[in-house]
Image (cartoon, rainbow, N blue to C red):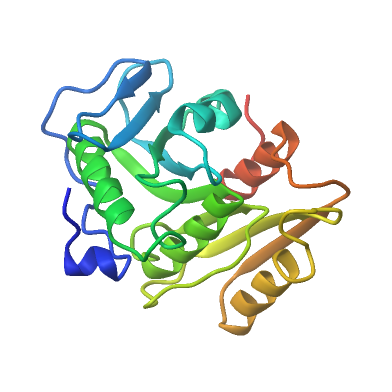
Length: 227
C-alpha cells in the first residue's frame, strides 16, 4: 500500500459517515487490507448502533493480536469498538524511517470501519512506541480523534497540528525502558506548553500496561465506570 503525501504528514483522510456496508458481527474481524497490512476490529455484543471507536497501537515488536489481548475485553465492555493495526515494520513508521506506510494502512482500515460501523467519536491510544505514535498522530489529527490515551510513551513528534485533541498520559516512576523524567514528564509538559488539555498520571511501577491503567484511561475518556 503506497503512502500518499498526506500520509507522509501523518494526516488521515477517513471520517465517520453513514455506513453503506454490512455491519460486522460481535467478536473479532480481520480487515481485508491486502498483502503486508493487518488490522483487527473487535466489536462489542449487541445490535449495530453508534459507538465510540478506540484505535490502539502496540509497542515495538508487537502485533494487533497482542493489543487485543491487552485491552479488548476492557474496551468492548464499555460498548466501544476497538481497531488494532499491526505496524508494517518492527515498530511504527514514525520511528522506523518516517511517516507514511503505517498511516496509509490505518487510513484504509478506518475507511472500512466507517463504511460498516456507525461511529460516534474516535480516540487514539497505545503503549510504549505505540503511545508515542498515538500522541503524534493525535496532534496531527485532532480534527478526527478528539482524545488520546498514551501509556508509557517516549515522545511526541508531528509535522503539523490540526484540531485540539485532549490528552491523557500515564507513566511508571520506575520505568527502566523509557525513563519517566525524559519521557512521561517531559512529554506532558511539552503538550501543556502547546496549550493542550492534558491529564498526566504517574504510578509506582515499571514499563507495563495493566488493566487498572486501561480502566483509568477509559474512564477519563468516556466518563463513568462501566456497568
